[in-house]
Image (cartoon, rainbow, N blue to C red; front, side, top):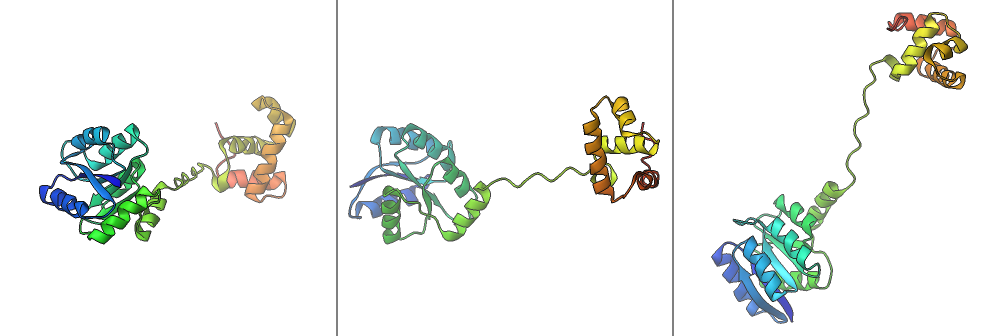
Amino acid sequence: MIRVLVVDDQALVREGLVNILRLTDGVEVVGAAGDGEEAVILAASTRPDVVLMDLRMPRLDGVEATRRVRAADPEVKVIVLTTYADDDSIFGALQAGARGYLTKDAGPDELKRAIETVHAGQALLDPAVQSRLLDRLGKPAPAPAAVSAYPDGLTAREAEVLSLIAEGLSNREIQARLFVSEATVKTHVNQIFSKTGARDRAQLVIYANRKGLAKLD
């Protein structure tokens, strides 16, 4: 027998689910709760295999109740109950550990299949909900790249090196001015050539003057 706890703040819905389940082969109703707090207490005392958990309830909603029930006993399987399949709270409940969801207009056969499915360790997700869930739980979108304050993606240091080139300084002189190694200066210069498309230092000087980078304080 699969031990089931029913949780719903609407008495008619709760009693209707209990009555259906009592007529369902292989299922035993071990309790019925009217809100999330009562659900947590009853789950601890009755140790159900499956909890049918309403999402929107007073005192403690289904998402937090699911989290607490699962924290107390990770073996408990939770199916969230909702009026609409596109209820955004479904995602919070699934993140809290629920194994699937059912709409409240589910028939006896669908209810039985759902309980048997999650009890067997499988998830119960509509394909559309599964797709939306994966979108929400997937890797966060990468942060947009910072927009450079300088043209052609030049960094602040590269712009500084370019301004020194425009002053006529050699790599060694730039090295001394910036207190960096000559190799570092060469790297910056190569990057500047690549980003600006200049072929020689004379073109870099022209570029720096055209872009207003010839004299950077």
